[in-house]
Length: 252
Ligand SMILES: Cc1cc2nc3c(=O)[nH]c(=O)nc-3n(C[C@H](O)[C@H](O)[C@H](O)COP(=O)(O)OP(=O)(O)OC[C@H]3O[C@@H](n4cnc5c(N)ncnc54)[C@H](O)[C@@H]3O)c2cc1C
Ligand code: FES
Image (tube, rainbow, N blue to C red):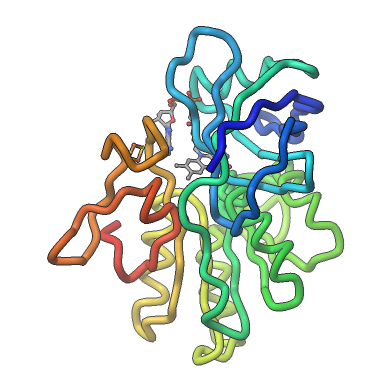
């Protein structure tokens, strides 16, 4: 882990309220595992705490993040211009474990796709990708996946399957060999809860990337804890023991 200075080279709105941010780092970042994240110091003096974002892509020297504007920090970030200086603590946390199965079913819900983008790229043909969003305007979030096949759902039915991405997966679940697959997911808690319900019967292995509010991102403040089934030590720090957890170990 390192605190690296960088310069913004691109900060474009790719869909309404969603931005792709490219930062040219002044030094190489340590190798990362998909699912790990960075803590970005928001330019200016108005936001004290850094904000966590998943590593969307990294090709030395350029780190790419994708973010949705939800509050003050991301609002200020969206107004940041080319050549502006940023500091990035990276890479942080524990990413996805990709040594367990032959085939992975990857699910991204809305901006949750940012948390699994690097993962999809790394897995290539070893994965089947599902993406869910509100309407077809948000399909721009999967544009960078190029030719990789993606099963998409929209809540308003303007593209692909009408409904949630979990409902779509539920329809297709029987087409996968359960003993060879594992599900990897990132999205809102409501999506992860629905996912748990459809995987519960066969207890299909699943890792989930949790997004909790963070202060330090380094395991020091215990501001990001989540409850797990571990009786000896139930509370785990999302920034240190996560953000990727086994679905069957967390209490959503
Ligand atoms: C490991 C990790 C990876 C993440 N990766 C991404 C990413 O790649 N792209 C992206 O857009 N966002 C990501 N997030 C969420 C992102 O950190 C928050 O959206 C951001 O910190 C909000 O900052 P803000 O100042 O704009 O909003 P705030 O003013 O701090 O909050 C605005 C609203 O968002 C909610 N909120 C704030 N932080 C979180 C959070 N961490 N999880 C859920 N709700 C939150 C608040 O409750 C509030 O309703 C990630 C979070 C974590 C923990
Ligand atoms: S954010 Fe401080 S311990 Fe996780």
